[in-house]
Length: 341
Image (cartoon, rainbow, N blue to C red; front, side, top):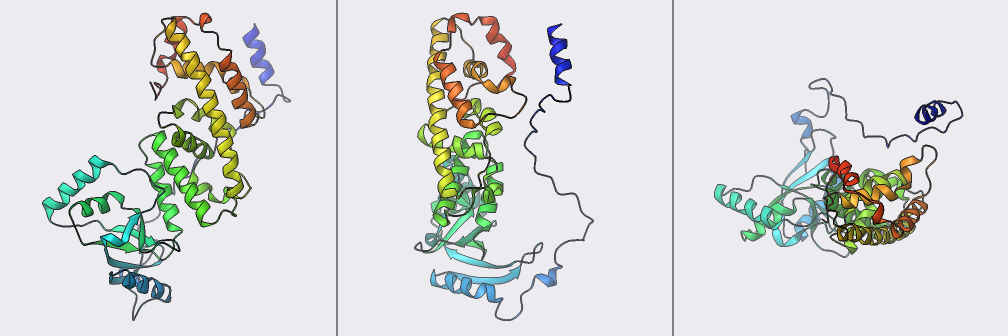
């Protein structure tokens, strides 16, 4: 009877509506064949070059590189350079995922075996005060060529530095796990802070993807073994991009990260109590977080992230392991194993 009563009350006109799920990015519809972009001859830049490229060509020359060609990209028509740059004058952007030792060594083996470098890196001019170029897409290829002792590397040089954030946003979506995605997002964020910290955080939503990833990235910076998978479902429901400048908004993410780590500290203590009782499962953290999560029963407007995390911290501190049975843990079998376990 109780369940039917709850179900009927949920259908009442004045009952609070369930919050909408975050909007997904729309996949572009397939367009008619041969309907977009430029034809091959339209990509050719005649004469000495496009005015937008003049300064970039000089930058290439100053770095000891050589311009091989000038062209417009076949989709958007943006002017670009095809150039050969000294490997010593190009570095990865400092806000992308860490270099994989195994990946770049394997790549070096393949390049050496073919005796050819066939996949140019993307390059942009480094920020003021930094000489040479940055690559937002090509870190492992660059490391492989440097490992082989190569003097130079081919690159597609883009005049607009904003393209670096767009490329990194795409790379973030391809990151293998939550930790990689979060660390890459917080590195992008710190790079944006250096560029101009007066711009509104909301304006960078395309590059940052999810505000919760900024907070989790800070957590991973402070604790590489942090189990972010347990907290991401909570944070992504209560965090939104701010209208405030990113120079101010980062302080809120820092504060929420500290609070999240406090929750994790209490959760880890509760897990220890469960293990002392003899309860073993790869889902202990998920079980405890589910028990202390106040969002499970809320259908109307959600409380602030600060209130949710404070509630979780306080509940975790009072967690009673004596009331938990092995059967309760067995019901978590369909969940995701805890990362730090």
